[in-house]
Amino acid sequence: MTETLVAVINPATGEKLQDSPVLDAAALEAALQQARSAYQDWKQTSFAERAALLKAVAAKMREEVDSLAPLMTLEMGKPIKEARGEVLKAAWCAEHYAEQAEQYLQPLTLASDASHSYVQYLPLGSVLGILPWNAPFWLAFRFCAPALMAGNTCLMKHDLHVPRSAQAIADLFVQVGAPAGLMQNVPMGNAAVEAVIRDPRVQAVSLTGSDRAGSAVAAIAGAEIKPVVLELGGSDPCIVLADADLDKAADTITLSRIINAGQSCIAAKRIIIEDPVYDTLVEKLQTRLAALKLGDPALETTDVGPMARDDLRQNLHRQVMETRQAGARCLLGGELPDGPGFFYPVTLLADVTADMTAAVEETFGPVAVVMRARDAEHAVALANDSRYGLAAGLWTERSRGEQLARRLEVGQVAVNGIVKTDPRLPSGGIKCSGLGRELGPQGIHEFVNAQQVWLG
Ligand SMILES: NC(=O)c1ccc[n+]([C@@H]2O[C@H](COP(=O)([O-])OP(=O)(O)OC[C@H]3O[C@@H](n4cnc5c(N)ncnc54)[C@H](O)[C@@H]3O)[C@@H](O)[C@H]2O)c1
Ligand SMILES: O=CCCC(=O)O
Image (cartoon, rainbow, N blue to C red; front, side, top):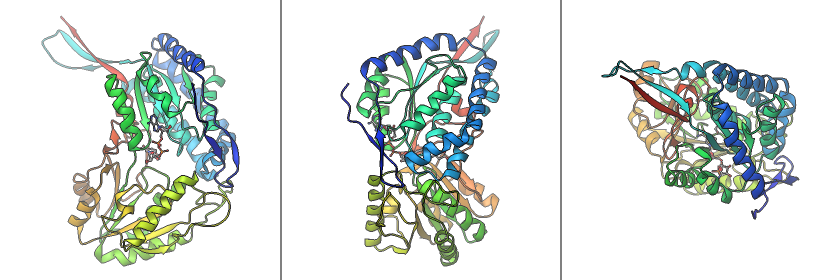
């Protein structure tokens, strides 16, 4: 296999850490074979046996959090306090599915002309998980924990910019004595992915990443008639109406927008404020955003680290410049800093309109984009005026929030709180934000054969 190696760069310093390794053809073939062989035994294990393994992995993660978290800080610049939280959340996901999978996959009795008819949920085989760099541990576990508990085996093609995190995830399974081939790290370039999806030993695909990658991968999976789950990008609206608690909204929106230096799929990316409270809330946001500490992600005091790569930073800056040129007001940041690393200042763009770049495209960085809505109707129209449909925030009186949620074209809505992911609740998008769901009971139902049984 001919591959161009990806250079892994410490985003806080710009220094090269290593070239990212990829499997050669023989190693990839061995991994596919091992995943298939492991499946023959794993599919016959009980829920209790699977749960014991997942719990052991979770315990190991909790024990090793201080050595695992810095891997993300080094490879993609996640502030250390967030990185630790991510490892613990990944452990929670493993524990959640260990405890709930049996109940989530209980056979379902359905009345018919049979003496007894029901649906049972059987594993499919080996599932390929294609993952991005922005939450290396969490996204890996929300893919693999339900798939493994359902009796599948996993092949993890992680982003090549986070090779140490990816290997550490696979090593956790080896360290707790998982069967060989159960959960494997299969580093490969994008060009090699097609053959793996088409391989008869792979039964399903899950991709978290951009809509461009999702479309390419889904086309191949579709051609092979293999199920696919797509967790893609978003330009999430956060609507704040005049009756909202503005201080609480400002605190929450600030946190939502700057987590992981703004590189989160479900960050509040378009902040849509009703006219009567527009100026007040913009001022509150400006005060909070200006107080954030940008700097070395290895320090406990850092709120916002660098962006993961320079090309991502340059693209964000293009979006900011185009939006300013189109008439938005830049109230904070907006200038590319000198110096080492891929830092981008916390930026606040006000008076953004629906046709401007920062409203049309996903902004994946610490840039808060504020839009003015005449009233609630206009706010809903602005929120839905996007090719994306991942999640949304709503700040207003609770029952009004529930009514408005039904009109938002997204897969998840938080009323008077932060949009977040939680192992207990399904997440996923509509429109260009994806297909299917991860997490909660819905997540584990994506990679099973819902087999109907009819008894005479
Ligand atoms: N919806 C969610 O839950 C969620 C979670 C995290 C990130 N994301 C999205 O991911 C994006 C950020 O990640 P990115 O830009 O690095 O994503 P990306 O699409 O470039 O890469 C994601 C993964 O897909 C692989 N990939 C890319 N093109 C491919 C192709 N043609 N064939 C096979 N594999 C391919 C990459 O190597 C990587 O492993 C953002 O849009 C973000 O919103 C979504
Ligand atoms: O980027 C998306 C991942 C964020 C999350 O699941 O919390």
